[in-house]
Image 1 (tube, rainbow, N blue to C red):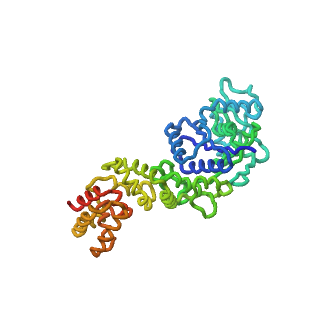
Image 2: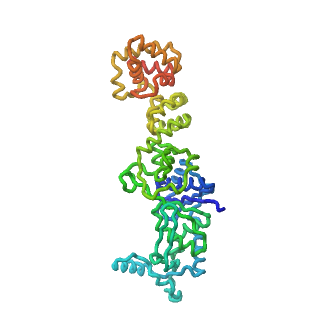
Image 3: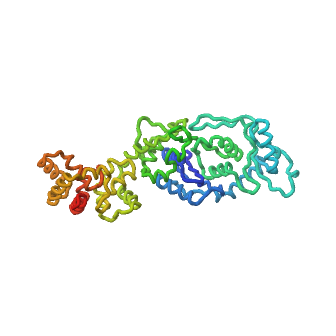
Amino acid sequence: MTTVRTRFAPSPTGQLHIGGARTALFNYLFSRHHGGQHLLRVEDTDRERNRPEYTQAILDSLGWLDIRSDEPPVFQSTRQARHAEVAHALLASGRAYRCYCTAEELQQMRAQALAEGRPSRYDGRWRDRDPAEAPAGMAPAIRIKAPREGATVVQDLVQGEVRVANAELDDMIILRSNGVPTYLHAVVVDDHDMAITHVIRGDDHLTNTFRQVMIFEAMGWDVPRFAHVPMIHGPDGAKLSKRHGASSVLEFRQQGFLPEALCNYLLRLGWGHGDAEVFSREEAIRAFDLDGVGRAPSRMDYAKLTHLNGVWLRQADDGRLTRDVLERLADISGLTLGETAAARIRALMPGLKERAKTLVELAESAAFLAREPPLPFQPKAAAMLTADACAMLRELSEMLAATEFSAAALDAALRVYAERSGKKLGQVAQPLRAALTGSTMSPGIDATLAALGREETLARLRTACGG
């Protein structure tokens, strides 16, 4: 039985787009579901637009998403000699030929086709012509001989049966006159040599498939199965772009999304599996197959992604979240990020993560734990610190100075104080929260007090009410 082998083949001409990330995820999950292997090929042959920093960004993005290749990455630019070798093999077998058309002749062909209202295609004038008629000193391109009768049919695993009349295919160039292979040719050679069994990619590549099948068949190679996945659109149905919001993987990371949440969201974007919404990686591998992928474009829903991220935040390990929060807080001036702040954040993390939807929100809500008094106060929090409230906080300070600083003991002490003073617990807790955090929102006041500790609590209360 043939081992399933998939590949993700990005071009390093920019950051890894969210659509590319979904394609990589689908390839990875499909290979794992079928007990196969997943590979990475960097298609870095566009010398004008490729950048090393984009290659690194793609590798970083895939690493962050935990979409791992089972073999070292293949860089297409290192394989040009092999691509040329196959082109010359096709030439030797009579399945390709040398074309000596000049740039002017090709331009004339295009202009004539445009004037006659027909598609611009090479007219095959060197297909059966004697090479002895070639202009002296002119380097030829190599073109494949396209079939002229019948149709090329692809049984696409997502789109169903797709066909094109062979009369619509022209004799495309596979090796340019300067010896550089064309993209469509290089992809076929690489897929064959990497033993790829399934090509899962965006449906913007669907029209390329018929030309690539032509090369596979001309070489007598097995044709892989194809699956063309619809594009991801913005909420308005237009092509997803920066105007809709984040569109690259690293932007989502910067905005505080967890990789598990982003992968979970992308899995369900265009793939159906009952009513289940939350999938671990193991559950996704067990469930995913191509028969659940729809044919219509998907629409990016940032609100749904944010909600899902909150679900994954609440499940995440507190130590891991603390480390991420500390890294994000390092960019905020005026914070003291030592072991004390780390311990406070770690202690309060169970409560902090209950309210947050992103790591950015989580870091913002934890920042008060790393500040030194005097704190910056939000307007609503400052408004709570009236003269009466400060008088109450001075009484509370005396009580807290003599209280054990565990959450349970602090909760009991605050309840006793509220009952004794004839106040509701909220009337005590809210001014206390404002003085300690500079905000009207925090985890439970007992847990907040315990995380800050007695010395820091009393110092903040003194400072908030002017001593």
